[in-house]
Length: 480
Image 1 (cartoon, one colour):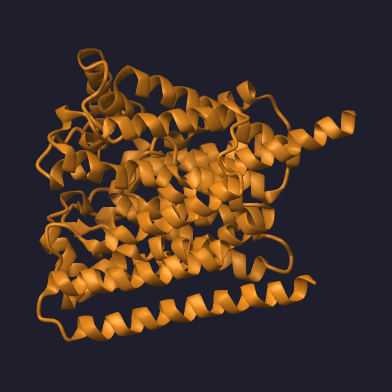
Image 2 (cartoon, helix red, strand yellow):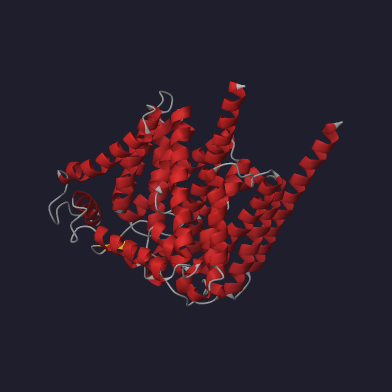
């Protein structure tokens, strides 16, 4: 009796997806004939939204995979689109993620994704409500700044409930495999940018954006297919963790070894030092969890890895100007900063520490914060306050005041503790990567400008919470 109904549902899914595809093709044809670039970009964005909405209502998990792929190439898509259709003050292509997340969130609610049993799920909801309330704070410079700030701050957090609803082990494993492939492709593109130069669309973006952080000694850092170099580095690091955790089996070693070398080289030449310190910490915690060591001992070992890394790297620092070639300033910048993290002439650690300290001080001057948009790109785009401190705890303090800071600290402790316990109990590659992912993105969980990385992080937290619930339920049943 159920077969005809199943057949009808399958036909409906196919019809919806064909309607979405037809909408994309039709809208692309219309956009190609337009002379107004802003309207043309809006038409293309609406076409993509129609396709994703159609797919999401028909097959939510498929939409989840497509969304992760889209976010991984969002920067590339925006730059290529700008060749024909110049962006205006705002880019409609940025609306694709919130609409897709909204569709997935509705589906997640229907599947019980909002169930709150753990400290992690409860504090995530509290933080989300604070971000929503913070968008109405008049101190940030206007309602437009606050609402736009939700795009960068609240939308990725919704990935937590999507992960709880849809990320069973099989789905999360497929997501990580997709990230591994996309990360390798992004690394290859980034190395091409470093050694062969930037294509015209990337050159135009660098010129128009005036992104000073990309320049190191007159050489521009790679950013791959992403919207920023920092997002590129984080995504490549996550892909590297996936290959390290599951790639070195006998059947995969021939593929894994060169890809790990590719990803490691891309990270080295991207020239961000923070991610290079986080990676050893992630690996130490993964190994400690696998050995089922106490968390306190594992954190002490991770701290030792941070201290040892500069000593090891210092023996590889090249002399100034050595090596030649366009990429040598990037390598020298990387190694010099790793070898001398406390030297202000070689590292920006003191500058970042100053920003974080000022952010914490703001929480005591403004105990309710200055608004969600103030610590996002929206603060610059819409003429509001731009108070980003480049780290989550101080950003939470600036945006949401003392309540936001408390919520974030509780969230951080609950998430890391729950992820570590899960990895120690399961001792499998999925839980190991989930723990490592939390570490390599540490203090950047609310950095919504890292579109793909931020959503993937909250999706992972949702999987951790769902899987912990399932494991605890199994333990209770076993005792019974």
